[in-house]
Amino acid sequence: MANEKPRKKRKVTRAQVLRVQWITPHMIRVVIGGEGLAGFGAGDFTDHYVKLLFRVPGVTYPDPFDMDVVHRDLPREHWPRQRSYTVRTWDPHALEMSIDFVYHGDEGLAGPWAAGSQPGDEVLFMGPGGAYAPSENADWHLFVGDESALPAIAASLEALPEGAPARVFVEVSGPGEEQELITAGDAKLVWLHRGEAPAGEALVEAVQELEFPSGTVHAFVHGEAGFVKRLRRHLRVERGIPLEQLSISGYWRLGADDEGWRASKAEWNREVEAAEATA
Image (cartoon, rainbow, N blue to C red; front, side, top):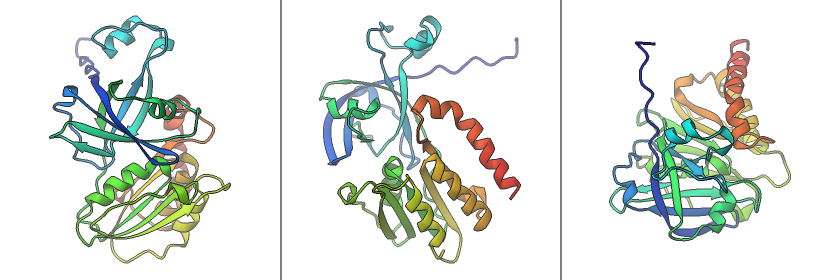
């Protein structure tokens, strides 16, 4: 059509692995850098994320790498696999970005890559995206998440103004997965150990039992889609928190890989909204 706007070109950033550090037995920090990061625009949000691109083995890609050419010339099964990860830290002066990966052994795509990555390895990604940062107008903050949300929660805590009240609930598999979180805020941090319980069960119980402080809350709730769905209903319906005071969504879904979760997320959002509307 004559009035149709041209599609925005998908910008791919090329970087290299600089360092790899095991934060806990199941959390790996990969620091990437290089001149390709010049002009990278992270920093406005504490949930900034990038979409890492993993080449399909045996497929020849255009050089220089161009996602528009890939989508135009290659069959879908040859398109790089995408995985979204939070930018844990970004140093625009050193051109260094760190990303934390949850590691489940050989399971999955990104975790094994992080475990086996070496300095000099190529990293391709798109982004950043992001939408959340702790509001300066809130009377207090609520942070709730599992391991997948921990990097964003950690970055958000570091961004809190001095003395800003916060209640923080983080669920991990066990005591060995706890890590130091730094903040100038007045944060009350509770680590919850999942053990053999379903993902997020302890988080739902903790938030439901929490005596909310007075005043306006700004809440960040992310992680496995099942518990996020339950907590969104609790916060929206039972606590009466307006949607504009919430950053809340599923980062992953039990029993689904990343492609499967992304394909079903729009339908999941519609179900959540419909359930709230009829409550």
